[in-house]
Length: 399
Image 1 (cartoon, rainbow, N blue to C red):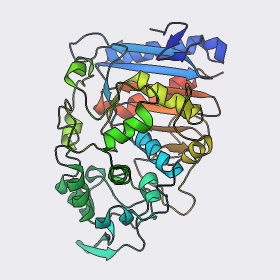
Image 2 (cartoon, rainbow, N blue to C red; image 1 turned 90 degrees about the vertical axis):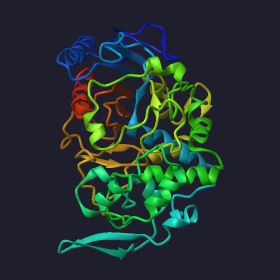
Image 3 (tube, rainbow, N blue to C red; image 1 turned 30 degrees about the vertical axis):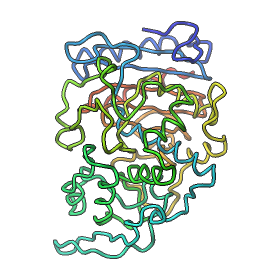
């Protein structure tokens, strides 16, 4: 189902041919998404494609939940790791104010991280060695802190993090982050890109610097200025009937990721994975990114700051070999950055920025093509499949 030809989610619309996209390819996109629903990979999903600031396609397919109503235009999805770019943008507003430096040691704000140890396995035993240098704010934002997720591997350090139950949102933020500081790092700070709890620690830093809860700070700096009215760290009871549900959450339960009903503000507002959102809200966030930090007269960041965020911050000396970072990509501050046309498993162009969540929600922005696209679903057992199929279909429409 295509959007009206005037405005959708507060953004102007266009016909595909007006912005250099193939109408048959856009129509093929819709048919492919309907087919994915028919074969049982998800209960339903929403899609959006915009080019040159104008929405070309806004589709809804399947059902909001198994056996439930048709997918509504304002469906609310748990976006998991698509939280990270939003929180990273909020963090950079403090950098622009001079209240936070990327070079600052983490221990300046969270003293519990002052003397971190790194876990090294030798002859079946875990040896703890001192960190060679402090973790910095820059490390948190580009995932080079050495912090990891417990489910991200099978090493002794992964097991310790998993047993510590850090991603339990029912426990207070400060308590969980202090517990994390007692655990060893997986790698030396600055040595490797390691997907993990870095952004959650950043969220606690933002609370300390701003004097506000993370939810209030992010709402003040990003959500309210952009009119993202359904994006929050919980779904209140009045909106619960719009919350998308999966056919299966077995994979999330196995990783101990999804254990709350999120109907009230959680004690731990997880900066890495905690937000819910709608495709319309996230479209407004990406329109701000494409607009160099501003949308509809509301400036969130300066254009130079935004450009800095979406540049590759890993460089040649940081090990980026990690299954959670797609081949052919680097990483900026909260966003993956495509470095090669080839190597990656999907069609694309150099300079694309992207990220996605374990639920199946994903986005990318192509500065070269003046295009952004979003898919939102709640299908954790097939999240990589949806991400790759959708990207290939949209790229095939670019003329």
